[in-house]
Length: 640
Ligand code: SF4
Ligand code: MSK
Image 1 (tube, rainbow, N blue to C red):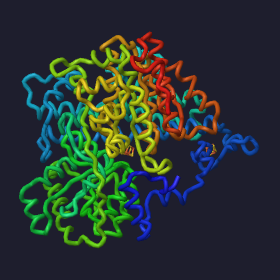
Image 2: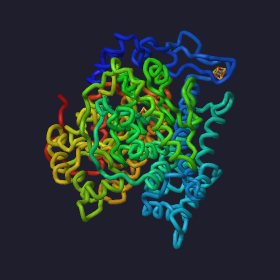
Image 3: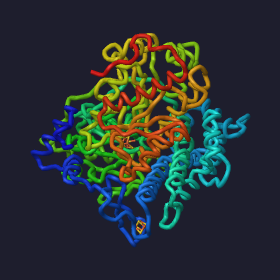
Image 4: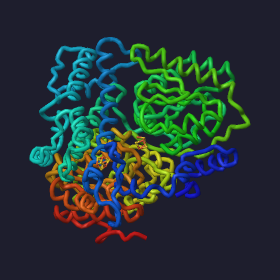
């Protein structure tokens, strides 16, 4: 699919300019790659050793085994396990860095950081068995940071936060020997097991895949979410804006992009410093705007209301506005194309992580002890760059949209339970009585294979029309925000009658933005609360819920998908995991695995059909639970 399929007006406008001026974007480079390698798409190419690369002919006329004798099944499952390990490692390494910031804070070596949610600090400590009585926040932060770091290197046992899962799931994991033991251990073991000449049984390889993914969902990602809430503040629903129109023509514009909110949180504070604002005015700017891209955007949006400039596919387009003085990138999802795009403009790209070094780009590696000084230095660099802006090259699209974001497993508890009664009871009751069909998670990346995020929009519209409450994270949430779907009014305009009634009663949108990619852990926690409340299933696999990452792109999405499947959920991806060359592996992960862990995969690129796969699944769970028929839609809404 080419840039011709891009729908967002802001994107269309900037792509016209890109074409006229000869600026290359992700859509051009994607198109230049097509048709993409069929062996790669089907997962039938192996590069694990230097007897290869080997490939398996999916039509059966060419080689059916690699040089070592590996079958299509082994090759497909091995590669999938490795990618899942990479995804799990990425989220978990993010969590490790946060734990190290806790240690620095505890030692008094973190400038500009404080404990913003001391109540949560104590709650998490209780789960880790850390006594907090009579101790200062700083001392507790040190203990918690050190305790969490031990979980990375833990060799045996069970991850602490995985104990939040219902007993049924924990028993399944123990029986299958996939209960995550230590975070790093699972990643290393997956890499070792997938070396040439190691694990050859695809069933075994898929078990390893699930364990390394569970180490992410109930380990790395969940730790990252909890530590971020403690350090940067637990989100509360707030109003903000999204799309490239948040960039201001008369201000110094700083984009924060990536996933780790550590330095970007301090940059947001620095940009409000009166002295720096004065400096910006001296350079002719009216102020300083900080706006986000990708999940650094989501992290700062849900806690501080920082506007969102765009999602993954818009990172180069932000630079093409010609009005960005500095783009500050941390980790993950930073396209190399960003630095290339910046060469056409005055934009200074600055990397803040030595783990994400970019050729030709300055690195100011985060040092917690100097974070405020570093943040000010970065903002000053952006201000100094303002006079270099070429006004003739400035093209800021007008599009920006109001949104509500900042829902968490804890605060949904209060919203759905009423102001004075924190409980999941009303949610469960409205599911049981047929007002809400179930809960659908619509998350993940945007992918040029599908245009520019429009599949998310079509998918969620179909889901809410059919009374599914939608929870969101990542770039999918940003895409829906830009479309105006994260406003409470969406309930009146598009939701089914039952969902509409509930949203009106509690004043929430039918789509709840729960944060960044690591915050998919919030969805797990909310599902645990639904089980705990009772009445709609004794395990996560019994709940009327389903998930989708229809435009998935990153290996992190594979880890997320796998931890939901291993926790009992149906997960729908648009384009299949790269295993389609093996019928046995495909059948196993889309059908057989459901009998083992309760969850399974489905692949469907048509968003309306994907929505109905989720709806059918939710209905099958309702039927199994003998819940009431849907109040207003009998038996199902028929898609138009
Ligand atoms: Fe080929 Fe086997 Fe080496 Fe893979 S591990 S590249 S299939 S010889
Ligand atoms: S940023 S992983 S493109 S959701 Fe989390 Fe977006 Fe996917 Fe990156």
